Length: 427
Image 1 (cartoon, rainbow, N blue to C red):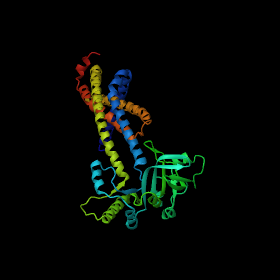
Image 2 (cartoon, rainbow, N blue to C red; image 1 turned 60 degrees about the vertical axis):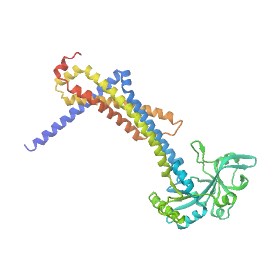
Image 3 (cartoon, rainbow, N blue to C red; image 1 turned 90 degrees about the horizontal axis):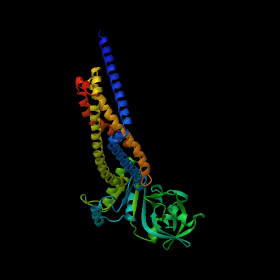
């Protein structure tokens, strides 16, 4: 007797599960049949959900694509690298105005101080830039070239890699040698069919011998990243600015070491500049996160607006679905009466109509996803876009939830019908 009770309970449980499965399957196919029978009505019914899902996925795709693009092309300072410069980037206009009055440029003495006193870094290097230079080779000219003075260690930190030839060496740096490392834009213009190694080019009125060519980087927002000339930082100071304003790049051994190393560099600079504990930094420490945080604040506003628009469309779509389901309950009153007279419980009727509503909304979500992928292909012709899996899951999940929520009232109305009254309804 003691063993029969659990077995009976299990059989009853299995029977309930099977009944629920049959009800769900039947409701699913009834919803599919209703959608396929009245195509125009179905399209209009699901239009709100389709637009909401498509809008949500497209916006999430564009933001995701732009996040990847910014991280790769703009915020890529090098692996585990931060930059010490005069200003903190992306700090807002008011803060920048204050920093402009307070901050002092980073000079060569600051770089040497950090190089000698900072502990535990992997690589440290410095750069100084001079934009908009004119470069000559023979009678040919390239304008708006970025001239950069670099330390030899920047080859291990920066984006530039040697394609052929070599980078700036320690002897070049020590002796302020008039040599240069150039980008592919200059090679394409000056030396399309000639080996540029050993040739002399003129940057403004300064002659530099080409010792190496960088690998092609490409463009960022349509701006070429290969239109540059790099020379030893000492040669840069000798030819242009004896006290050049520097950016000091510091590379940590790992991501975990980044914050401690930033704190150490900040402490050393504050000590060097005799700042009191209540004084703000008069320099800036910038990492990739600085740029990404600004970008994510901007896209966060766009995403918040999108969520509002999507919510409106979803509510409108849900109300339309609820109206259609109410009409369906009225049309199928006689059918509901027959089902109840054959033993269907209120729970079965409730489940059937809720599932029908969820299937309708879910179908709208699936159509919205397909449409979003098509729109995304078009969008990719103009901006970077990448559909994240989370957007697809959110789109389907949200549409199903809307269907479930707005299907409760029609379903409960159907479940409460009196079977006798329902059987009297006209077919």
